[in-house]
Length: 250
Image: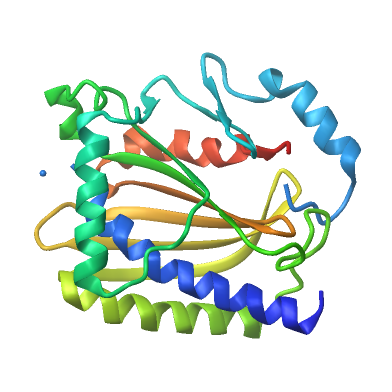
């Protein structure tokens, strides 16, 4: 990877971690291949239904790929009460925090089942999968078959800069952030940056969050998974499987 591209990659990751804080505040109730080749992707897609857990629903991500979810989750409907509430709330929080809202080409929110109908029981739990796509100039990021080639020093720089940005913004909203980790991982032979943390807002239950960043030449794909720590027995196993159903097909 060229040095310019690598530096741009690091800067982009740090900037989006800052924007991650907005999801921490608002959205809560009141294949980069390093090895192999195209044949692996084609085989995975052709056998996709066999590679996901029984009774899971396949969700098409427009102009990107596929991901699958269990029956306890649903895709957020545009115009639903929760969608309107979070759209308005997000705009207010961006303005208060001074953080520039990222220009996403598309986004998809997956939530605990029942929120679309404003089911009262659904608000007693919390689980989210959020997928954002950021389009930039061709060649801004590694191609889908390229390794990220990030050293331990690069990862530490990303973590340090990200934490500095998070801590500055979190002070505005009284958010406690702890147990942060960052690592380079593989998901279905796609290289990604995984950033995890635990957050608490005032007296609300602690939430565990994972943020994955995938890259595809002119795209950065961000997948954020989160659930309450005191509901780990309900969500942890399924959420560890959800990320493994993600595949880029475009």
